[in-house]
Amino acid sequence: MDLAYMNHPARKILDEARWAAENGFDALDLTIEGPAALIDSFDPAELRALLDAAGMRVVGHTAWYLPFASPVERVRRAAVEEIAASLPVFATLGATMVNVHMTRGVPLYGDDDELQRNGASFAELAHLAEPYGIQIIVEHPPWRRFGLKQIRAILDADPRLGFHLDVGHAFVAGIDLERLLDELGDRLRHVHFSDNRGQDDDHMPIGAGKIDWQQTIRLLKRAGYDGIVTLEVFDQERDFLLLSAQKVRSWWRTLE
Image 1 (cartoon, rainbow, N blue to C red):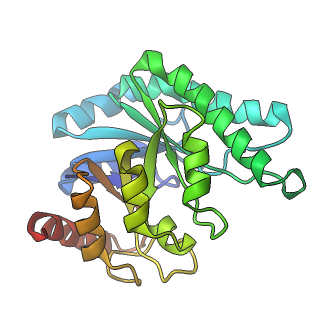
Image 2 (cartoon, rainbow, N blue to C red; image 1 turned 60 degrees about the vertical axis):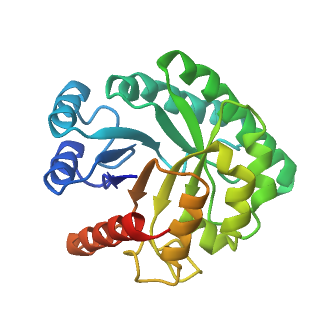
């Protein structure tokens, strides 16, 4: 297992990458989003040199609020084109995975329309990403109405899509993690860790909420996952993030 740090979108990307390297992270979960981490806010070659010197890998992350399920076709297409524009940058940085987020549709159009539009957007991106050697991985939302059935429906839009598990989202949504991994473990490509109390996606340090992290790690290991785990912990005091990293590394090393 490699542990990744996600840059905060309100901070400069190069400063965030230097901090991650100095503090022993194995990878950067690079989110390209505003206000301070937009696609034209940094030099990809400079960032690549920094990461290569530190021996760090990269996972691509994109803005969670892009309207992939909009029933206004020009708006939906703009969301797809925004991700497409980032693919050459992610490829330059050596990323082989780029995430996208399932997003809300319009209630009047119904749930099936929401699933279909998300799936169509991601299938198109899977096709556009393939020449770059990038897999599009789909992150599920922290919504109680959105469970395993809905996740599977979107992934079924294209066999090239991978599954991006956010453990905090699953906890808020009330999803049975063991069943989720049993059914979708073969498509699991990336994992996010952050804690919460089961009501909101709080991005708390590991152990500060109600998630059973030792059981979570046991389930991931049983499913055969040994890839990158991102700590998506946003706190003013980074000591809590570093303590979270220590806990996760220790548990991953010792738990069966």
